[in-house]
Length: 200
Image 1 (cartoon, rainbow, N blue to C red):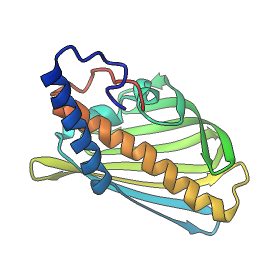
Image 2 (image 1 turned 90 degrees about the horizontal axis):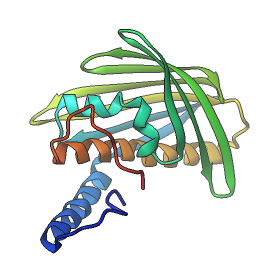
Image 3 (image 1 turned 30 degrees about the vertical axis):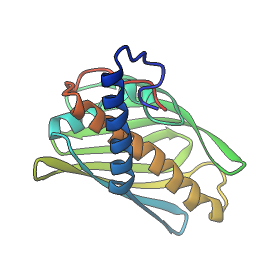
Image 4 (image 1 turned 135 degrees about the horizontal axis):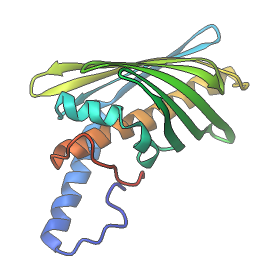
């Protein structure tokens, strides 16, 4: 839980936090949509969500590379190794799995930021022959829509019947965690540079 380990000193505050958390999780479960398919050896994923947050708050979470492992499931490490005005190199380590299949994953990614709407990512070394991703933010009423598209070709063997299911589960968990963190920060009015809570 987002608030696990926190000592609630006042019952009314605790009930309010619990009510917000339950509502938030239910709303996110309905708002996040993930689709996957194969194009020969390429695993393709598309995800989207409607966010009750500002563009700045969403952008702040998406580019909080040094803290991603604190709230994204299965991500053990995420660190920035290089940064210029619009280019960032990030190294990540984690694990992915489905049923009794488990995979250790390491990535070195080159990220191009096109503020305030678009982020492009490409793996330059690691566990994937090809891995590209694109986040896009689009104004929607008082909030924003978040779109993600990605293409994956693993270096490790993934049985066809496992690949789509494992990818969809991983994206649902990780994209869902990003959405939840954006909404958490928006709900408390946290600034984009603030840190993140421990992941669930």
